Length: 209
Image 1 (cartoon, rainbow, N blue to C red):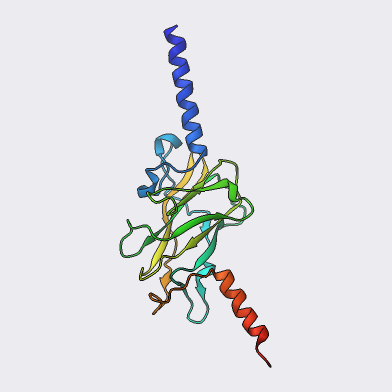
Image 2 (cartoon, one colour):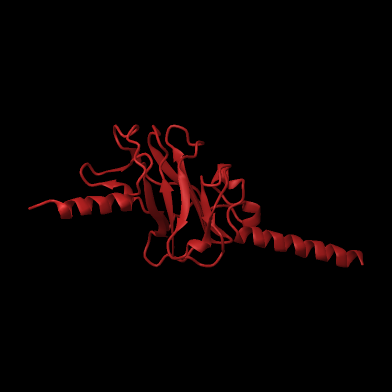
């Protein structure tokens, strides 16, 4: 009887572990930007480049070849394969952090895109300051929105972790730098990039030749 009870407890623990992995990054990832190595039975990859990327093109400013954001504006970003033929990924975790203080998380995240149901917000400790997966099914791309904070923030980077399989994952990664647009700390902009672009297009359409 004791043996059966022990086996039952072990199986229950395994079930909880698997369930935890399938529903997103643990609370500890809020600081470490890393899955739990004991749950993944391996250490993160350190000898190979991350085959996935967070596209920063929504921030690209062609006039001076920089990546900038405006306070209060909402941007749509995506996690996609960075190399041709890269395998699908199962898990992810993303935050935005200050360049001046890498422990400070900024901005508001939100799920979006055709498979938004495969992601959820992660409380770190605010419910909207990170985003992670909500299912361990294979994913070729995931999309999310990020709304920049109001007022002065300074430059930021996106920190992230990507899980390809239980034994293969990349932790504590950083994107390139995204600068706050010069002189934008008091603009009070709250419209999304999409709405802003539509507004400019309407103005152009109404403007006489």
